[in-house]
Length: 274
Ligand SMILES: [Mn+2]
Image (cartoon, rainbow, N blue to C red; front, side):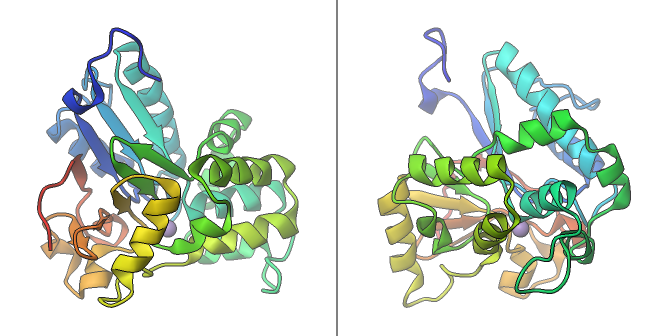
């Protein structure tokens, strides 16, 4: 965590990036525009903080390239007094599941992990390039983090509360799943992260968000997983920024990069409310 020499958190910049899905080059270009890297993808963000919200791979050409980039940025940022962090998405569970036990069915779905991962955009080149080092790094990531007063998660769901009663419990449960590598246990927990859209209802959404924030911490949920073009019914090339909703309690930062939307590098706090 922060050293004694680091500036107070509120004085250090904080950015988040949603679902990259193998699109390494647009990611580097967007990070360079934001001043967080140079055009070669090396950290220039100083003591700033950058968090990724999961779904690094699948549906795009260079998922392992994205993992390697983020791993390198985490080292470079730490050396510069900054921070690069990440929470896991449902595609990390699919990818790692397909790596650990490709032929196991994703019960009760008769399809195997390898089949379901491929149906969800899994790329054979990524699986061939995935090393133990990548697997170990991914397996050490949390599913949720509170940074300043933001709750950073991948999926827009209350399902995180089914993993534990506090942030620490939720992340400990996920660490156990990733370490034990039991297909049944894995499938049961992975399924929770596929849920989506649970803060969108104008009646129930704000209350659902408050319940998650009350248990896990933070004053605003920041998530990916549900592409803004799909949620808002707009063309991906017309997405201009994050979507703030649920009475300002929730921010969707997934621009829909894998089907033509922008790679949003979102500064937090994001001021605009719905
Ligand atoms: Mn997702």
